[in-house]
Image 1 (cartoon, rainbow, N blue to C red):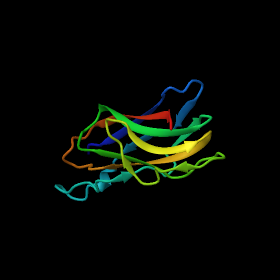
Image 2: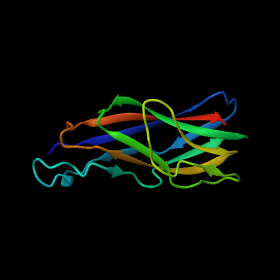
Image 3: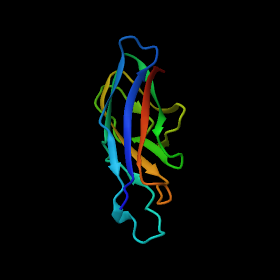
Image 4: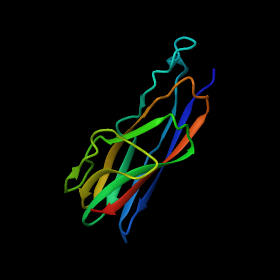
Length: 151
């Protein structure tokens, strides 16, 4: 039986922030189980989620900041819809706001969440929708980009 695999890479980018940084730890490499096809002609369940702490973000910045997210399609099917959400606050002294509901990751930057000062171990979860048996079995690859900028 053919397999559909998803490989998601992460990169980070800092914008106008000398000496500040964002670090991404983790990845999501997922193969759709063949048991999801129950009969010939029926679709996959279509939606898959990662673990709630699949990836962690560490942010070093001495003021208020915001994180945006977008993607670069490497070998990707445009039918897929990819989402991310923040599942915790991480560790730090100030608040983190927003990002607790799934937002769609597009090919242009979108605001994800905001915060203030250093923040470590912010957990993220991913979801992919519109997986279908109509899409050819392959390994699909996308690069997710997180950008740290002043707020």
